[in-house]
Amino acid sequence: MSVSVKAQLVEDIKEFFTFYPNKKAVDKDSTLYLQKFIAAPVMSYSPETNFAFGTGAKYLFKFNGSGEETRTSNMPITLQYTLNSQFFLYSGFEIFTNQEEWVIEGNLLFQNYPRLYYGIGKDTPDSAEEQYDYNQFLFEPIFLKRMFHRYLFIGGGIRYNHIYNTQIEEDGLIAQNRPDGFDGSTSVGAEVAVLFDSRSNILNAQDGWYLEFTHGKYFNALGGTNKFNLTRFDVRHYFDVSEKNEDIIAAQLIGRFTREDIPFSEYSFFGSSEIMRGYQEGRFVERDMLATQVEYRKNFKDSRFGAVAFIGTGDVYNNVKDFKFGDLKPNYGAGLRFKLDKTENLNIRFDWGFGRGTNSFYLSIAEAF
Image (cartoon, rainbow, N blue to C red):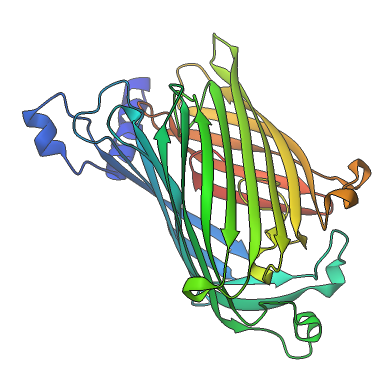
């Protein structure tokens, strides 16, 4: 098979998974941005869910009147359904209005999904494993206005997190300890937020900084069950290390800190498909968490394929005075990339992460961070 035929085959496959909501309008007015809805099948497996099937998708668009000065808005959608009749629907969106006067970002989550629980603390044993199930609805819109600098945005929003229909093991660890909110909770809070985002590409950054800080005050009004504070930060930096191949080094540091009367659902859960890959989400649970990671992204010239290697460390702890560098938990791994859309630099990623005595693999659209 010739190179040109292979390239056309790949392009045909990509087009099969790509839809253009405003194509007719763009055909009439070439100044409009061609909106794209790119979807790809995803599959995963874990003992508590059995096989899970679904789709990962990205809706990429710009408002009419936006040009090159406005970065592409990104609205991801992940939908999965498992053989155990569980479901997961998530979107973490970032929307730029015309000329980037405003940024609208946030999270939307609706799920009926199980979680493995080992107790609260940084050193809980594997032997304590038990499963609990719950329903969750999370809605967190944040509105930020550009102020003082081209890439600085300041604003605020709300966060609503409702946990219900909980099911726990009889005589299990949760039933014995009965942490606040084990049988359901509702968190209602107002947040202030600051964002500095100089990335030229949101989906797969090749340069720039991303710094986000949010602080939320949660209260009993509007159905809230607990009063507490939640503070989060996310710092990322990207830089090009090879002009020839456009190889990238990406680094990230995140923190999550809670205070006062927090329900169990607002504890910090260690491990995910984005940070501390290799650890199952919630393997360690505590009030606070710090984690960092560095990733080398290798791009093969004139090819849609790429590879990554990553390394990181982090931990959960009850208070700042309990944090110890000697207790940090390591993770490392590697992955493959396939460029689904060259224009937007959008990849399908497969990562295999390893932690201390554990490992997990991940298949998704777009980079981990």
